[in-house]
Image (cartoon, helix red, strand yellow):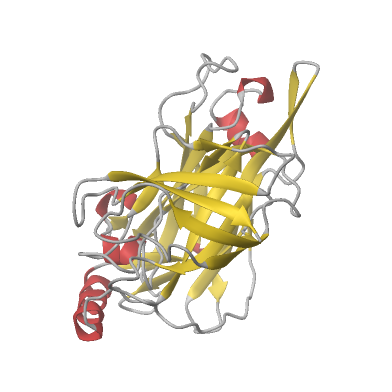
Length: 322
């Protein structure tokens, strides 16, 4: 495991809001900062464990790792930061493939990032880079590469310790903290994926919703979107309004090509009845893809995971290359 100091120049971007008023969100953000602390995601540099299977043996790629840049913020502009504890856990998303019976099922403590490994970022707040290789994650939960297959994943959780004795993590951070402007989820899911060429499933695609609307179209149905490569070789994304009948601001929608299946990770909507956190997520039966044919593919996901506006619905979009 590596903890490295760094300095990074950040770009100030626009803040995407839901249909709630700017004033209401600003007040909520201010209240959360004054009562707690956040560990913001500044950059995700790498976040996947690509695998290759040959002659019954599984190997993991050289770029298998979680590598992220984090920034701490509290009411005293970082002066309350003491340390950050790091944990990981393994989820077997492919129980029928590979033997994971030896896996440690409980969350495993990986180590502590001390205050000394944080440096001042461009805005005077403490920043650090965290990096852990796929092999280290496997070792932590007592597994070998042969136990892995697409759909498996590791969840790495951070616990922010303050000098006043308080600790903040994924279990006590509200939606306005984990998503939106602060983007402080305190935990990251690192999927096991099969290699995919970065030239596949990219370019302009016609976007069509083929399931019944959920109070109107979820995305801009019938428009052409540009599908781009995301943070990893197997991640793709496009920009579209969420619920265009109500909101017109573009939002990124991300999905993963996972060894034959297209999986939609938990992500936020910028047009929702509440804060929009954890709004879109994986379906029980995701769509499949053909690695040799990117002319057409489907994305199936769970819409309104947390029942923010209504009960969750399964939504499917068809994308046809133009």
